[in-house]
Amino acid sequence: MAKTDIHTVYKIKSGQRVPSVTTVLGILNKPALLNWAWQCGIEGKDYKLVRDNAADIGTLAHYLIMCHLKGKTPDTSEYSAENINKAETCLIKYWEWEKENKIEPILVEESLVSEEYEFGGTIDCLALLNNQLILIDHKTGKAIYPEMAYQLAAYRQLLLENGHKVMGARILRIGKNEDEGFEQRIFGNLDKQWELFLHCLVIYNLQKELRRS
Image 1: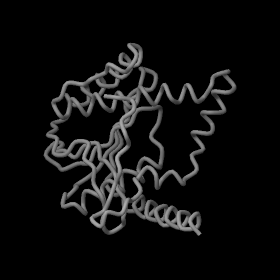
Image 2: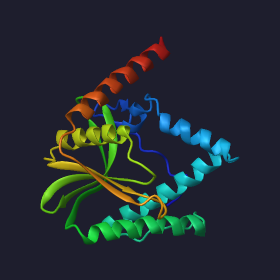
Image 3: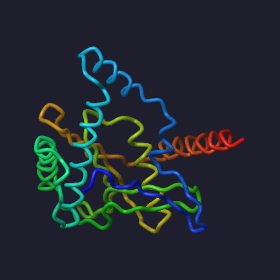
Image 4: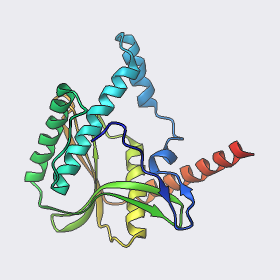
């Protein structure tokens, strides 16, 4: 997998380009990120270098899990041995979870768009999990933050709008080292999170209009 892979462009049937879920949620303030950058400064670290290195590990871990689910052989040639080792630690944690769960992937890394609400996104996995159709999102890092649930709600809407009867959703947080651990959070109802995402979408579109005026 090349580090220079181009981000997915989402377009509705008319050919109009629409924003991604993550772009829409970018309007939200993320205090945890600011606190983390401040802590890096206290420790004498360049937060940009730390961020980029963590992003490499997270991206690679995500890629390894996707390759596993698709039955493909990963290409890790552009990554350092240290980051490959850390990403493989994430993969092992995922395998340990999978051993305890009966999973049959239906869609893996699938890009979808909403014609009704005009946004797009790429889901990690829709699977028959213990005989239920479940949306699964994989995250690497130290915690599950509220905006991750907003993202999950938007992905659920994309699936529903495209004919998939999602029965539930969950986030698998796979830490990049032993200290960060492993966490699973199950969501039975994401209606409020979806409502919040819609408000973000309205604000995003209004800000876009104002920039053009």
